[in-house]
Amino acid sequence: MGVYQSEMGFPLSPHERNYINANVALTQGEDENGALMKRIQLSGWSRAVADDVQKALAQTKLKHFNLSISTSEQMLTWKFRGKFSKSDIIKMMVDSVVAAKEGGAITAGVNAEDASAPTSAS
Image (tube, rainbow, N blue to C red; front, side, top):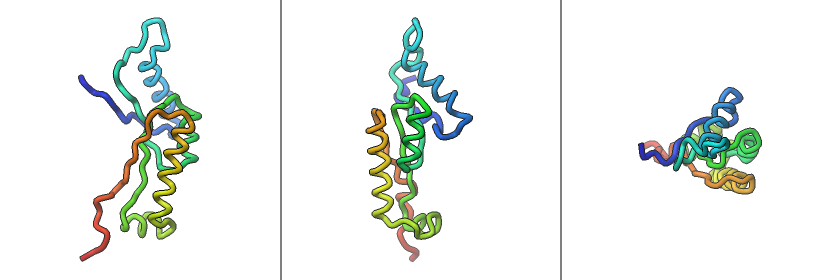
């Protein structure tokens, strides 16, 4: 089908771990037949929280991650209730990417959730 990459699960969800690991095994050719799914990169979605990434790496066979965190002023104010500054958000993303790479991830995609949201009301 020409699909190169698929975000296929939430590695911290206990009910998805077996599904994730079984699909990753199909890309690695862990039996005598070789890889059944070729030329595809399966990734898991995780919050941009270093601890979450470390747990996901320990509990699954994933080597590709999409790391997400809310970034707009609106979310900093309402979702995070002012608990995090823009600098905190950047540090959390950097720390989560470092955790992924140090844990053996091959790729770590960065998702800036709601990045196009307006910064102030007019």
